[in-house]
Image (cartoon, rainbow, N blue to C red; front, side, top):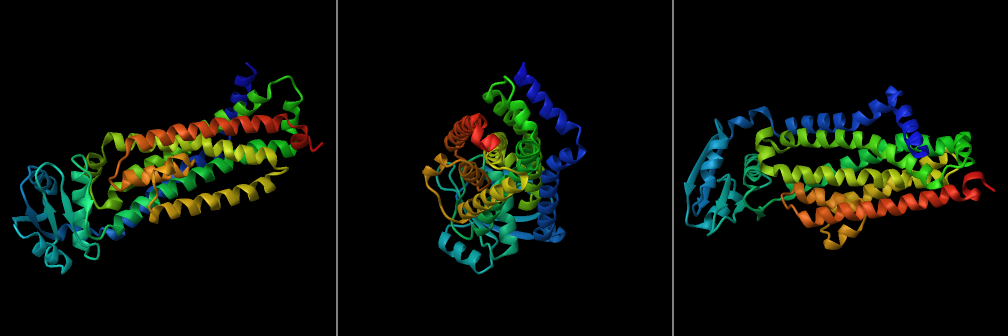
Length: 354
């Protein structure tokens, strides 16, 4: 019952402060606005005037699906038996793209990232073909890499910022004011105090995570230059579900980490300084992972594993096992951090400076 009372206290503090609620909703709104505007700049309204001329090697019923999805877009398919000549035409800008369908369903897309029309066609087609096979890019995949690298980076940073805004005041703030000490001198278990902070704070931070997830999901089609229907069909339910679960696994981990730092700090100012360093460290790791290939070992690194998995999903390289293992690893680290917070709360030297 004491644990429930502590949880209720945190929820009451949050839901009776409109500023904290707004802080949780802002991340998704900012992500949506920024990337929608960016998408409008990249994929101009005159993109419907594109005249895509695409050559196809081999046969596949997927070509008819692309034609159907194109709607009023000007798209012309022609057959070719000379792959090398078609590739050269794409590089020279004389051809929009080349689709290669060998035996079976595996395909290749050859396009030029320096050509606006070619890049627009790649983005449009990749979203449609993803449910069939992974895309084997052979030319100019830097644009997709940048997009898949930056979005998870932005989401994690916003989650960290949201966690800081509520956790520092709840833990370091109460410690500085002496209200946390009042709770600790009672008979309540230290583990209940730790859980009474981390559980509600994680739930509250999840609002920010959900906001960030919606911001990414809704802005992604615009950033890719496709319709919402095409993007949803391209990534599929599993991709979106795994992204959401990955985000949720990061929330309690970051909340626990900030709680640990806050419990150690003597004031909100000191805790802000420490968490600021942690935030920079996570930012650097997330940016590095966007441009440097990481091996399967990344699943063992908290937070970074979720970023890497989300980057893979957005780059049309979904790995279910890595995503699930990353979620499990993050939950294990969260449990260890909760245990560490409990030990800190039990330490009179840390809590009372004696």
